Length: 558
Ligand code: 16G
Ligand code: MG
Image (tube, rainbow, N blue to C red; front, side, top):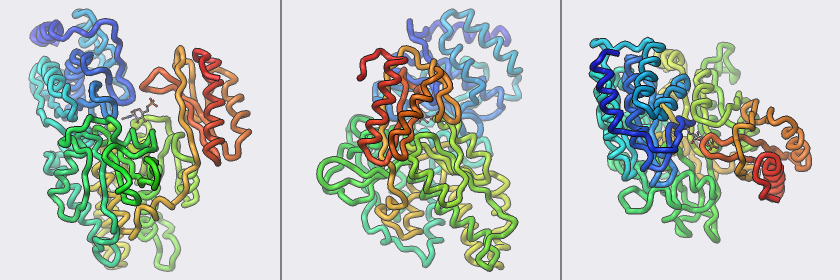
């Protein structure tokens, strides 16, 4: 780094002192905290983003959001050149940068890192960062801090894209680095064109009335509802009743949104008995999670169609297209099978969904919780579908497989119309569904297109399998890091002995399954249990929670 660079960094450092006594860490989804504590962190992430851009010689994204957390919180995370999460290799540097207190320590840290990573500050490559924020009131000021951080790397430029969903920003970063048009308009056009293409390919032609009930969407009082309004205006075919859009004045994530609906299993605000039996969906605060639900008669209870059920619908549809593509004309499968399909879940996936997918003959892999792990695994297949039960997920297509489909699609037409259509449908899915991260808007359009394709109502979709009753609990502990797990968090390896006791407890319940894991976002141990009845699932979860509390907690449970 030259003198000009050093003095720029030093001068700006003094304007953004870190908050006293707060140590932040770049967790599973970036830095998150009360918004009042974040200015200094966001400024430093601006620097981090500029360095990442120099290192990769590509455009980088910086998103200001705290997703489903309360409105007074905020957060910041980085999108890498391919639109995915920032490489885990840089997380320790992100932590050190955020926590540096002394200006010279700060400068040395950057200096050492720049040298270690061989980041060059030559004039040929300047840093370029796309910035966006969700609808939180603190977002605007934090975005300014990010710009300040970026501008203290010589030559770096930032483009403020204003209010976007998290997946929109990731999509734009990916598109920009591929040399594709990358405006918000392009995003909407790609989604809608591929959605229309899927609808046009529906067997027997377009049947707009197949889903006689309307779709009603809860926008979490956030950016997702706002963007869905735009999508609806651009497409006459989309008949959607949007509630809890950010413009209606409700509080972000307060009694609304995908996280609330999935965890509480009750209707969000703005929904009630008039919606009984209708097809309802809910987005989270930054629109990277999607769940569907049915309002049940009497009270506020719902039937939840979570990420596992969305995954199952997608898997069934993709498998059907691959089967058509690969059958040899005598009803059997071609020996040169094209398109290896893999499914990725976490231990939180309901056991009934995993059984359903395995019974379809699909390859199901488990990874630890956190999008980055699922995404990485899904990228190993020609088509990898991943979802967390909480509604975050997508479908990844390997480039080679897409090129193969593209090059063969016309030839397929002379062999069979059905094969040709199957190829076109797969290509349309690859354009509709976000290839960078889980995206509630594109996920919603894909669910809608597939339901129309199948001629299914939400009730029929819901009957694919019946969820096993489950219970999630959390236990406050002294130090959550003492719990070490293996096998995608299904086994506790340390402290020794706990797993044996959990195994013994599981043995008391038919189809009993239970695991514990340290949370990545809170100071707690999470407990998940499922069994054949709700009482059994509750009882298993409770007995394991008591065990954790006695061994590692404050002994307040009984
Ligand atoms: C973060 C993760 C989410 C995970 C959750 C688990 C991303 C973008 N988000 O929100 O995937 O399910 O953390 O939280 O990776 P926990 O560790 O507190 O249970
Ligand atoms: Mg989110």
